[in-house]
Length: 113
Image (cartoon, rainbow, N blue to C red):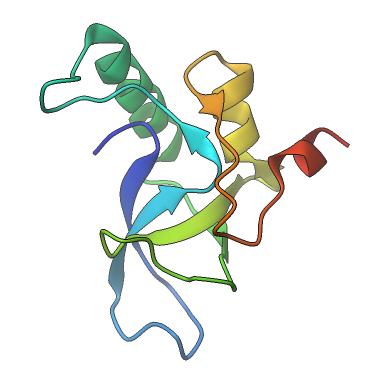
C-alpha cells in the first residue's frame, strides 16, 4: 500500500479482531501517496522503504483503543519492529511527517521522550 498503510497477517490477536489478515494505518504520521491524483515519486519511495523494512518480518502492533479503525476500515496502530517504534523510524528517515490525528489515543510527541 502506501508507506503508512500495509497489510499484516496476524499470529495472535485480541477479541476485537476476527480476521487473520488486517490492514494497518500507522498512527499520527503521513507519507506521500502512491496512487490517485496526489501520487508522486516520494510516495513510491516511502512505500518501498516500508516494504523493505517490514515484508516478511514479525512486528508488534499497539492498536488504537479509542477508535480502533479509521473511516476506511483500517486498524490504526503504532508498529514496533524489533522493539523500536516504526512510525518514528519512518519520520526519522524522512519518509513521513508527524500528523497528530486527535481522534486516536496516541500522542506522537511522546515518541521522542
